[in-house]
Length: 305
Image (cartoon, rainbow, N blue to C red; front, side):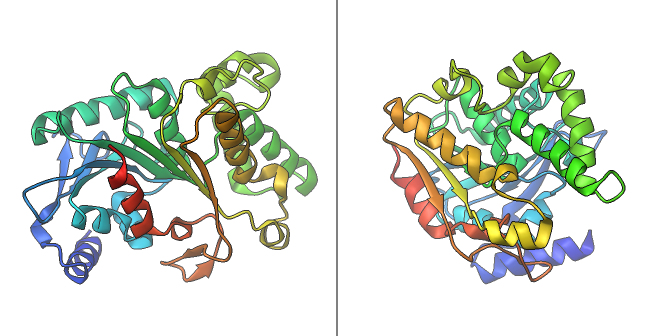
């Protein structure tokens, strides 16, 4: 924890933000492992809105700030940044009913404590955090002004089937731990495989390619939305033995295409080339926070009224 605190202090100082402008707020003071949020405060008294920023699966607020300057830059621009930790901690599935209800409670707490009722509200996230953000934007009564997701899995029928395919092609003894874990986790959350519980997949996934009724897509309406992805298929083939059928870019492009065909001219797909790097490990990876131009994203959000 001391190492994370020092890191945050260095980040704050480098961006000209006072160290005391960050705080953790717990819904239950008796349990500090889950259901809390990290608040990064703007350095000025006049706020320009608040950004709910959701970590990827397994990420903490501290690890997010190791990988991206987005929270600090957003705060510097005048936005209060809220980084939630949901009911299952870093292993929260995000799009399930309980996770969404916990996120709603966190936002209610943040709005009340920080008097945010008249402030503009934005939401976004990375990977599973992006899935969570899209799902929240679809279901929330109080809609955000805009939503974004960074290389997020959206179609969990596709995610399940591509994980099954990975195990088949690799062999059970050589399959990735992620594939094996996600097969079990998705089945648990959905109540079975797609062949027996397809209605649950349609109801829960932020996007479903095979849902001809476009149930989830239509819930986004004309909401401004950005999906970021770096579709470096040759990297995935070489480094992971995966291809386009297992990449989040497939459903990101499909969702944006369907939204635009339904009339949402505020739906954007942003693809990048060779921007994906993990800062902490200093390794190339197209599935990374770094594919986003942080300042350009912030400018886009602040233009939305």
